[in-house]
Each structure stands twice: as C-alpha cells, then as structure tokens.
Image (cartoon, rainbow, N blue to C red; front, side, top):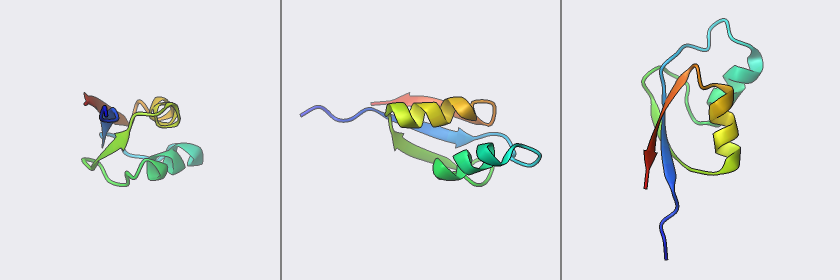
Length: 63
C-alpha cells in the first residue's frame, strides 16, 4: 500500500496584527510560535489552509 503524501509546514511569520481568521488558521494547522513545524497529511483542506496563510509559513514536500 502506498504511503500517504505529507507536507511539513513551518511558521515563519508572526500573527500579531493579522486578521483573526488568519490567527485561527495557524492554530488549526497546529502552529503557534515562529519556528514551530508540523508534518501534516497533504489534503485539499490542508492545502487551502496553507494558501490562506502562505505569507506566514514555509512548506516542504515529503513522501
């Protein structure tokens, strides 16, 4: 069985001064401090969240 694709998301920007929905999106991704990383399943929902806060995070593809 093939392994599910994953993506590593690292917070690079501060949510201070950002809209509340962007702060909540970071929390939904499991990020709350600059430099924190999470490995998440690569789904359309996660991709949409990453796109919403793309200016605050860095992504690395993983398999």
